[in-house]
Length: 360
Ligand SMILES: *Cc1c(COP(=O)(O)O)cnc(C)c1O
Image 1 (cartoon, rainbow, N blue to C red):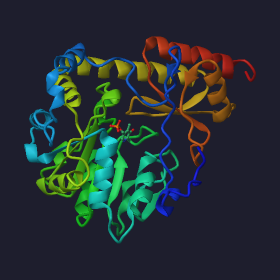
Image 2 (cartoon, rainbow, N blue to C red):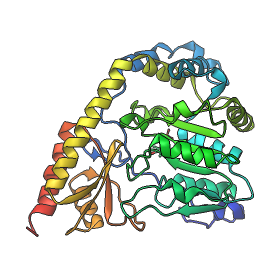
Image 3 (spheres, rainbow, N blue to C red):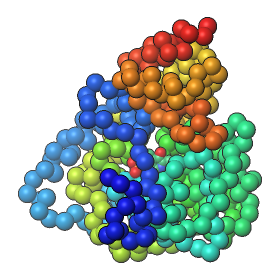
Image 4 (tube, protein in one colour):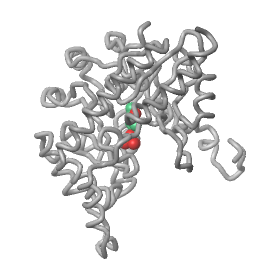
């Protein structure tokens, strides 16, 4: 498909620069460590719950605002229902949030290296933005965000670096920044970070966004949600109800409720991922990789003697997919999702071949 070619497209569409997700190969025997999916399936009770709603009721629309899932999530986090907004994946929640809170006169602020969808939404909605550099060791320094703005967004932990900000840092930012909305994208918070949730009661301009795609192994189901003050959540429903009345299907609602009910399975998966992350990090360092300390289910790594792109290509030939971002200052880094034990071992084995032989 040609880019910017069709005479039928509006000029607006010609100028878009869509997000490029990591590839989803059709093939079975690929080791997929490129999109931070869970290597473990969802809880068996989730699968049963989805099967249980595969019946004639599918002729009926789901509840417009996603109840009873909205209720389940509000109970899980000790919030009121009015503080929960549901969407078709957190990407959709983010899209509505940009539309709702960030179409302001002043530019919004986000890290130079971060989830690349933020730039895409800015383009889609014509939102001015200022990208703030990371520190030398690839961290976010929130003090750099103490400037006039139309809104602030960052993931915590950040992606694709995996670095974590403390609640103290976030609280200080919220004390300073009261005039615009601060969105914290906590897609990876379950892997060892501390959620900003306790700050919600004091800061009505903070929005937290979560996804069930990573820690709850439901990327294929497309469920995300936002937590915030009634005021922000009401705004999101206004946008959503001007766009799609039913973004979460009966299957999505059933799957997500079952996931929140099975806390043991959830905690167990998290524990396994963290253990795998530690082992993988050690293994990679033995092979000469510098590993950015990560609080996500992925590692950002670089090798002193081997270029990231050539490693990426060799791994791909070996049937192992990882992610390379051709973007300063991480163009010599690779982002590797933490897999299961077998996948992690296969990755280290392949890297030993690639990085071990020709230099040392
Ligand atoms: C994966 C990811 C998302 C998107 O999650 P979905 O719910 O699958 O749309 C959002 N933000 C960040 C930082 C992510 O890594």
